[in-house]
Image 1 (spheres, helix red, strand yellow):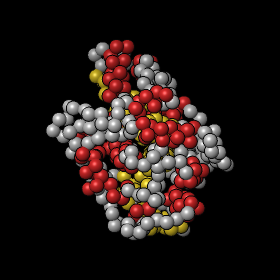
Image 2 (cartoon, helix red, strand yellow; image 1 turned 90 degrees about the horizontal axis):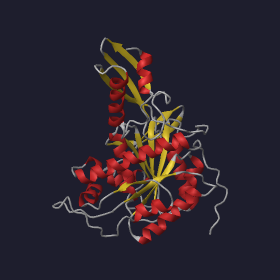
Image 3 (spheres, one colour; image 1 turned 45 degrees about the vertical axis):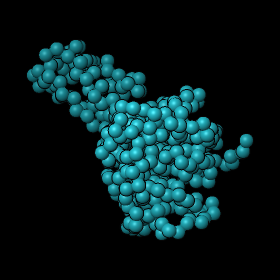
Image 4 (spheres, one colour; image 1 turned 90 degrees about the vertical axis):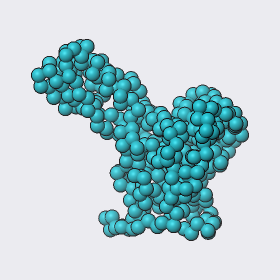
Length: 368
């Protein structure tokens, strides 16, 4: 066996999402051949790649079929999370992908989805941060059980920087960590926008594969401030099956689709899709309607990223500071893992196939 024979064989193995072979994508490294054994490393587009096993099996089959049927093949994996930033990297220079989780209205479980998405990405091996941009109604500090904690400060290049609190392997920042929980944040728009900019410029996020931003509901100042301040890779829209929630989700999709904003929608996820009682885990009760999110995604030609069930343990975990991804309920955990896998695939495809990520130059958004 020769290295060239191995490469020729692996040129028949396609990356399922990107539609090109591993050799063309330069994903094969460190081929080592000794007698009847061969090993090599495949560089994945993200540590949380859901196609890892499929790619590994395809590589083994290709070598055995096209080179040597007696070969003992070892496929190792590493990752280099893709990024397609084309800004000057003055802000969040160490962050590869910035993902905004949005909803058209409150009460659809957006913060729950954002929190568990961040955890699912981290559990897949990625370096992840979670920024709570909901200044008026922060909840991330509650969901992660860090109420009452205060972040530390450190000096970086002569500038005082806030050190995010770390919990369950991810970095967290929320206005709830900086103000008294009993006090309402009564700020006008400019003050809120300044706070959001500080979360970006004055927090030491370090090196991250993904920074997930839990956005406030609706379409307003904070959304514009975010897209004008940081290069947002894409947005994930959260809805429930209810007609009123779907109607508001359309507004969120429309906002980021406007030419002035130019932020791609990675996909849509439906929360509270069905109710599953703990004692009847195989049963699904569609309390709020069925497949509304899926139909909305089809209407707008968007990827449908998954259904999150209405399970008591998800609510209890959020209240107790133990999100579903680190809890014991396997049904809800698997739902978030599947959703995160679809999201990472969408992000990788966005980076490969769409224009580079830039800061939006929003001048004016007109009403309609």
